[in-house]
Picture 1 (spheres, one colour):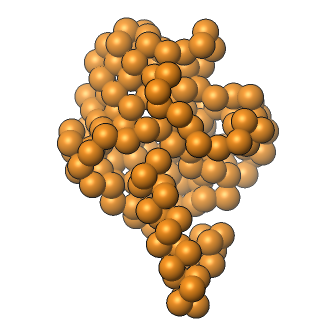
Picture 2 (cartoon, rainbow, N blue to C red; picture 1 turned 90 degrees about the vertical axis):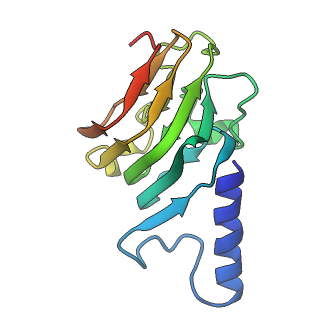
Length: 168
């Protein structure tokens, strides 16, 4: 969440300087958020965000998922009753790269519990469902519960990743 907060602060500073708007995702061809080494909670890449790479520093950038203490700081209604208890990717053409995704055992008995997922209960996904999600050079460390990823997209690429200890 700290990484997302930092991006929002940078966007607000840019607005104050008159250089961009918060929802102006079409200004550049792509965006990269560099996440420094540290431990972070899971996050949501919302509808309307496009061409974004979230780039970590390898195994020293750790995102905790499937954990009771990894709270997603969005309104319950924004999750469309389809929280997978991991990183939720609803945006278009999103890449998660060079990070360790560490998963606990908290699933609240949902069948689609996943460290990374695109499941959104089919609410508003039509614009993004045919766009790509890429997991690049990530390490997935599970606790023998849930999925490493739930690829509900027509194009979902996993490359150079290490995946251990998930149900599927």
